Image (cartoon, rainbow, N blue to C red; front, top):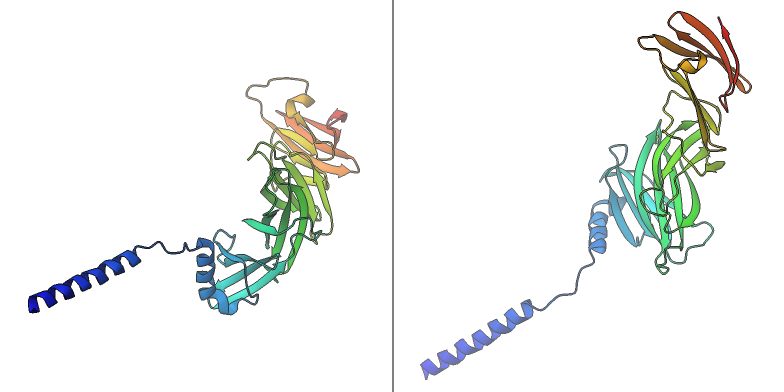
Length: 304
């Protein structure tokens, strides 16, 4: 009887063990990785965040400073927080990136690459509809400018086809604001263009082209839609208004095509209204040349 009882107890224990094994191998409900990541960030930074019920929360680690950037969505708006450490928040912003309400159920897909210009940091954010999947749907492209002096934020939003995905390549100070270059070559539909935005973001001008090269810090911008570059052996300009450039090599002013072993230099002397005067030197011969700076047309070329 004892042997029988022991056998029953063994079988019962085995059955319980098998049941437990079976239950432990039952597939559990999948965990949304985005929500899990959000919850982990909230566990670290949540006590410092003013906004409640964030739909999602992400971490941006490639800012132009050593600060930590968190971004998320709340009630159809975009949220951005800047932290010095998990114990110290610098500031946070809640921004409507669809001010014209053109995007149903907007889902924001932050690009959040940044560019530092002086004490300003620029961010680019895209928003699109989660319900409209066709490529021609409207998308929002927003630019944020944050001052690192006082953490003031300025933003501007424009609407573009979803398949046109220009990428902010370059930002530099410009006449009364900033010059931005967008690269549309990362897909088959995007258009590259250049944009001027005033310092207070109240004025925006867009040109459907880019210069042959990004204007370096040494260029001269006599007008907001034009720049002049003076190099060691040439002078050239680019007119954004008509998307055209011109170049004058120093040899052009002497009527020769080659000059092996020659020494040369070129220097900008002045700009008066629409005319510039440059001093050019080829070996020992110095000439003063006046040109229309928008077109490169030579008005005079005299030996000094």
